[in-house]
Amino acid sequence: MRHFFGIPDDEFIRGDVPMTKCEIRKAVMNEARIDEDSVVLDVGAGTGSISIEAALGAPKGHVYAIERFDKGIELIYQNMEKFNVSNMTVIKSKAPEGMEDLPPLDAVIIGGSAGGMGAIVDEAQRLLKVGGRLVVTAVTMETGYTILKELKGRPFSYDGYQMSISRYRKAGPYHLLDPLSPIFIVAATKLEEGEQHG
Image (tube, rainbow, N blue to C red):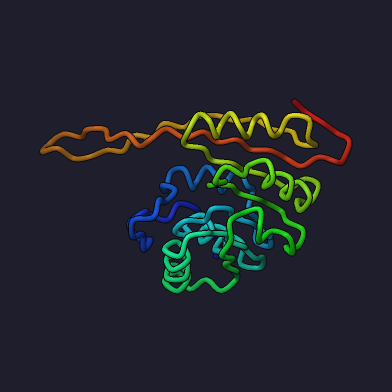
């Protein structure tokens, strides 16, 4: 049965660890081009919401989730159990550590870099297959700028955009809009070595 992306936020066990919201996850999964046999890396996995979506969308593939905080690791395992996900490996590490021994990847999704974006993109470039996808979400302008700077001169074609989501909220007989924080999404495709774009 086909999996459709966009698990409602309240279905995840969350605690106080930041989580990528449902509408953003839909866009990220689409940009990553997750297929049923994709091998995917989620860097800065947090609650595991992105990893879980990817694992459910790639039942014949595998997902690697890197998270450095114990609270996040615990939530990822809890969500794996809740959603009956077994095609996923959790790595407790601050990226790029933990990426050294991974297999060739179809997609790398970066939701947190802890200031190490350059080294993480180095490893992503090494691990991604030609045609593989790199998707970065950034809630700050600094991170958005950093990933664009890092992609210049590398064998990637890329583009990006900013998403602003507002959700309906009932107020008596009316509906109001509750805005979520805007987010930058940069999506890149790995090219043959020697090719460059941007």
